[in-house]
Length: 91
Length: 295
Image (cartoon, rainbow over all chains, first blue to last red; front, side, top):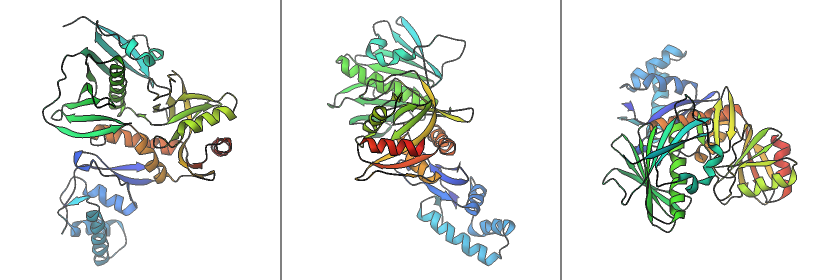
């Protein structure tokens, strides 16, 4: 899967948000705020093809968490990203 | 080529050039721009706008992005195959009365005026210069913001809300209540981030109020107004402030350069100055509560 074209990560004070641009997002009126770990994963995923497993491996590298928990959390987050139409190719 | 003449202007610290064929006198069509006339220096203008009289308008046959309501008037926006935009202006009575074509970065623009009543030409030129300015400066830490602004003791206070909420009423109440409080602009001031500070500038675009002042002040605070039966005021958290400020900016949200430029500038504005939510009645007590809280 991939992050869709037309979304950019932006700093806002000590937070990170996703802003949309492009004609396909002309009616996108949400502002999406990411927490620290989601920001890390967004930066890692930008511009590449990835799957839940490779993303979970990034989580285990950076946080003290076992592989099964990391995968479960990543899938939960990707479910959310998919529902917000931020990613293509999520199954 | 017809004979042309050029005049330089400086708004929000940015120099721009307006050229026209000798039959047109843009200063007469747009007197509000005169206080912003500038001397020509070695500095390159951020954009150049060519104004010409056209018998027919070169409206593109394809690439319509959408029709946008700008204060009751409709603008059709066309994408010129990624090489820029064409914006067609319709008067409030529905007449098509002019258009603006810009290049991709907004550095060059052409305004076509038709031989329509003077009020239509004024309307086209006002809108075209405003859009050209916002587009060219969006990646230069500069935004055009829909707000009414007053100055008090050396700071600018910007009131924002959808049209009809009472921005102008609230800033009029400030001027009634507080000595030496002055109107800076009543509709579309410029905010620019300079050396780590947000500065608000008057502009040639001020809606229905003829207030075209070439002045600037460091920003004191931003206020989002709501009509409510009781006066009350609260500070916004950064995320809320961002969400309230962003829709107040002139922006073609589909354009990557403009949208990322504007959203970065808004994030800086949120970082540098506080923003408040004011629920208010149209009375002097609201102005006093607001001033006492935010100053």
